Length: 382
Image (cartoon, rainbow, N blue to C red; front, side, top):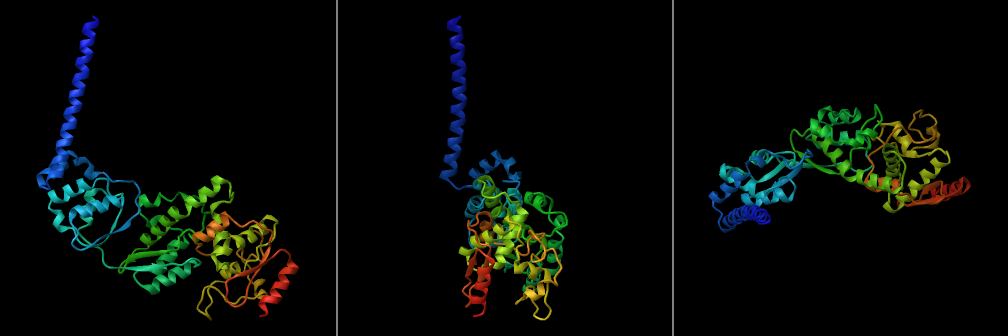
């Protein structure tokens, strides 16, 4: 019996090894065939063995990205670039597909808007029609929604009024279903609040004609999720902050409007956090300017200069000279440096600051109100 069992085990092991060796030889032969020639027949074998993968997207992430093809780029190089940029999983399969279907000759040079949520078949179809030439829009840090909307109208290519409406109402219904459900961070957004502060300020390329508000808003939210949220969650995990995201953005927007130099942002953030800790009003000039809104005389959204004598006449929850604590929400789009400053403020006991004269962008900090008044007298009288 021992001899019989051993023989059966040896036969099973031999059979398993034989199957493994056979499969390995097939893979090796196919690989050699593909390496040794570039014929459509070799690619056809690979395509036939992997047909089902042509209809599978690389990722559920729907965020689109710009994909460029230079004139004269062969199908093989296009496929490799698609894989390198995370749009497909298998460059060889994509090349096999476009060659076998004759699409390789129809792939155009130009700019394309693609997504890893698209299947290889859908990407191949999209690459047959390049986008119209685009234009770059630059939305700087410190702008409020209305400024961005006005700029888009003036820049051309997009309906600024629709951008303002959708952003002010936090209307995500204009986005596609997959994209709309990917912004978990908007759970921090209070009911009825706008997207002020959540639309990441940066440069974006849009279509020169018929660009959609949904595309730009979606890309700004995508950028916010990619750039801001990892920094925020790291700060929370490390214990650097216990602030809710909405409060972080609100304070960061004030820092953005106050600070000129990046190295001063943590110090300015520290001043405001110190005042919040002791229940002292923030008394931040930009919050009053925000509440005052558009200034017809100057055609600007920020009144400059603004005087203390005007503050009491601005009855708004955004007026931090009249109301304690943070205003209801961000007053502008904070950049990453200002957000990081709030998450990692400079530790000090300053409660006041005043700008130096001469346009240096620097501020002088003080601990007491008397010292602050002296600094105001010294620096603002020059």
